[in-house]
Length: 428
View (tube, helix red, strand yellow):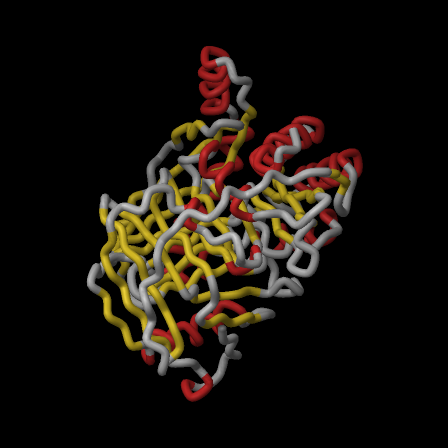
């Protein structure tokens, strides 16, 4: 394992990577070993396909306003110096860096890129294994095995985070007053809760539960940040760029007929449509310098998830420059979907009213290969496992606040957004 600071190429390790096709290994999450720290288990899966990884061949931690640029420069150097044998040659083969980035540049959580020692992937019916080592050590293809099943957490205790529910509702009310006074158009307020268990949490348990219950989201694990996000910040693949924007939410009841009526109500809601319009506009404006032939639908569709429904819009474009997927993610962050409009003013309101450090919640999370292709979601529906005390995890949820927002309704929405992680933990 190596962890290298940003710097000139001489300080960057030379990685040797080998990617080989393999027979379908079955459930990818089930392959994650049981002897790794939660921070060394990586995942990016949707509908059973994607990648899992473990171990650290190399990694970097960055902080401050240059956290994206420093991480990107390190990965460029790693990619340029790597010795790669890739028999599969698809997006995600060869060396891959999994990453997560703090929401704010001032956060102590900073950012990280991790190159796993082993990555197992599957896409379009093709499966592969990539092994990575530092130069001088020829990587050997591991024997893929299914370790013992993870144990469920026990003795769970949930406590308030920075604010109680009532205090957070007051913060929402204060934000509404700011909006009505014309200080901002929209602001996204988040809250946190803390869960403690009697023993260390097994990230494999959380990932398995999330992937099973929320298969149409992206189930991720990077450096102890675990979740299932429905929002694709940006995908770059062979010159094409795609982003899925979610803003505007309503909780499901479990009754199909009633939920269809709620979906129709959501699609007509002026409050939710206004919130969604701000988010789509911010993404389209951020992508336009890098893309041509952009397709921005005039109206959103309703995305049905097990716990909630969202207004959703898929934006697509053709890349016109050499921007990598990480560069695109940097240009998009923070979007109105997780910050507000105008961005600078909304960020100031967040700092004042949330009274917490979001850490890497609502920041970009995903992966990138040596060609610059990759997928970066927004770290939503997630929790951060405490690196020093893995029996603790912080859960997060946020809501978009506009002039028509009701504090009680927003608190209920935040509870709905906490459900995926609470259910994954077994805390009903």
